[in-house]
Figure 1 (cartoon, rainbow, N blue to C red):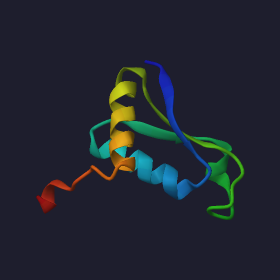
Figure 2: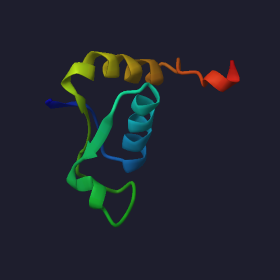
Figure 3: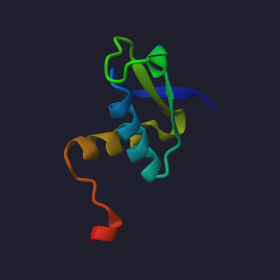
Length: 78
C-alpha cells in the first residue's frame, strides 16, 4: 500500500480541514511534514502534505474539488 500526496498546505489548520473532509468521505488520510512541529501556528514556511492510499487517490481528489467548490453538505442538514 503506497501513500500519495493529494494536497499540500502551509497552514496546519487548512491541512486539518482537508484531512477531515477526506475522513468524512471514509478516506483514510495522514498529515506529514516538518510544518507539523511549528511552535507558532499558521506561520510555517514548510509544506504539510496530506497523504492518502494510492487506491483512494482519484476519489480523494474529487472530494477536495467538491469541498473547494462548496458542494459538501452535512447529511444532518438535509
